Length: 108
Image (cartoon, rainbow, N blue to C red; front, side, top):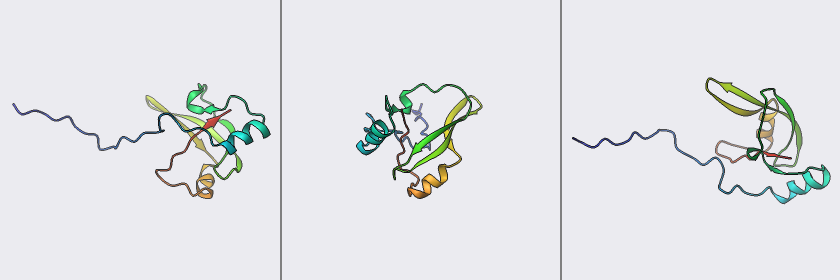
């Protein structure tokens, strides 16, 4: 009998974040810790997110501009995902982000 080859997914597997993840850039860390009084700066992936209610959060974008943004959990059938909404599109436009760019979400 001929050997069956496993089906390949059409979706290309791309790493979501390099392992280990890169450090927070020094200018961001300095602003967060020294000027904003932030403590415990970690990648948001490393913190447990609870609740399903949208959270109004402060976003510091790559151009060092701060803006209010909504962080929400969308439940879709048996899976869920976390999303940034409301002011995300202006952040993308102002920082010339494009498909394939790596975006990191940090929490403090």
